[in-house]
Structures are given as structure tokens and as C-alpha cells.
Image 1: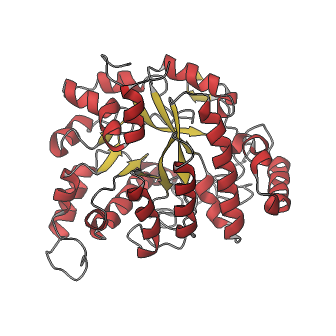
Image 2: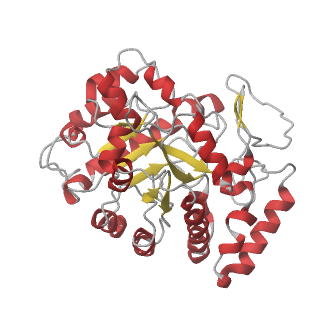
Length: 400
């Protein structure tokens, strides 16, 4: 195992399914949705000025949800000339990742070895944004096609590459059935992926989501919470900050994490589901001690605003069933661990996205001042094994 004999689990890596939908979706799409899929793929190819350019979302020329250019602060108007928005293969200024990692698992496995990662859990990159489609059935069909592709992709990893079933948030019962279907057929399924909020603006306390929580608890699979920048389903800050790039980059992800965390705790979800774990990603973690203190201050036992919450929010977090990944190199990592304990933190590298800490994620945690050896072991993999029984079983008897 990669860290002093202990397993390292990257709980937040990705497949860029938008890099080439004709690889990740076309062979796997339900024939009933072949025609709308081909129309979508044709529109994407037409809009792409360079291979792999983001044209589903986060682009003023996006096919599904165009985004206006970010606004500089302190001036009336800015007149930007926009060109293509390539993803390329750079994750930072000095590291390149082969785009083919998104369809060739051998490239990913070699990169995992380079980064000292034993197991990676794969999110899709933008599939939650398909909630903007009017046809919920087409959205679900796109998710299902991705699931078929990813199941095949991960099979080459011999347990080292795990994947998440993506929820169709507008169809919780269908999502529960999809999770159950794949969990019973593929041991590489690591959990359920949901967005930080629902497409209709409701939050994760929404009782309509309970069929998904029922299924996840019954299957002993955690729920993984992840969001994207200025991509549906939107969370606080998306339309409230005057499109300021400076502020959005500073607070949007953290506000999304706070929204998800507050809704789950305040909605009594952890009391309703005493064996279910949730984990938040790409929200940062340094804000959690402050936010948890504010939740404790707001909580009133028996209060009308939280009728299902039976204890202080800090007592819920202390159970270790609400976990969070740190952003690489966060200044307050050691402070957050000291305040809230070692048992709720996870490693997430965001590979192969731009801005990923690849291949330095392990060394960043290892070199973080103020972390004990036991905290490093738990962050790098121990906490992941505790909530992911399937990965823990593999780690006990890894397949060469």
C-alpha cells in the first residue's frame, strides 16, 4: 500500500465524459433515445472549435446552458473577445495528462501509480447538468449510457478503479432502482452521486429524495455529493453575485457545501438513516468548524424549523457519517482536523481536471504542518475504507 503500508484512496477523480461523447455514450445509449442523442452529439461537434472544448456548460457558446463571461469588479463594463475554451490536457503549469485517460483505463492506472494512489473513485464531470433537459427520460438515458461505459472501463482496474451511479435527481425512485441494479451486478460501484441541491431549487432534505437514501442504506453504499461551477443544478451564489468572477471563484463551492451540509443535518437525515454516510467534495473543508458552530447556535431542541433534528449538529458530525474532502493545500487543514477530529476528512485530487493537485495529492497531505501520523493515514485512505465497505474488502485482499 502506498502510504507507509496503508492504502491511499482518491475519493474524487473524474472521467471527462464530454471529451468524446461518441466514446462514452454513443455505443451505450438506449435505442429509444438514439435520435435525440444524435442531435445532441451533432450540436456539440458543431460548436467545438477545438477537440474536447467544454460546450455543454460553462461557456458562452454552450449547447445546453450558456454562461455569460465573468465580470471584473470595480469597473462599469468590460468588452472581452472570447475564443475557444479548450480543456487541453494540462492540470497545472507543469503537468500533462493524456486525454485518452477518459477512455483508456491503462493510462489512468499508470497515473495512479505515479501519484501513489491505490484506489480511485470516479465521478462523471458534468452529467448532473443534464437536468436542464426537458425530457427526464432522456436525462436518465444519458446517465444509464454512462453507467454502461464506466462499468466496462473500471473492470480493467481489478478493483483499483471504482465508479459512482449518477442520480437523476428529478426521478428519485428511478435512481434508486438504477443504483440497486448496478450495485448487484458490479462490485466496482462505490456509491451514489448526487448534486448539492435539486434541479427545482429544493435542498437535500427534500422528502422526495428518500427512495435514494433508502436504497443506499440498504446496499451499504455511501452518498457522494459534488457540484460544478456555474452549472445546473445551481446553488447559492450562482445568480446573486452579479457574475463576479472574483467572488464566484472564492465562495461558490463552499456555499454549495454549506447548503448541502445544513440541509442534510437540519432535515434530520442522519437520524432517519442511522447507517447511511454522506461525503462532500470540491467544497473545501476549512470552513466547517465555523459553519458547524453557527448551526449549533441556530439549533433549538424541539424547534419548529428543524422538527426532525433530535440533537446538536456537532453531535451529528461527531458520529463520522458526514465526511468532506480538503482542497489541496488548504491553509486551515490542520485547524479543521484539530477542531472536528480525524474521522471526517478525505483525499480528493480532482484528476484529470485542470487545477488538479495530481500527482502531488499524497505529498501535500504528508507535508501539511500540524497533522499527526494517524490523521494523515485516515485522510489518505482510512476514512474512505470505513465508509466504503467494498473498497475495504478489496484493500484487505488486493488483486495484483
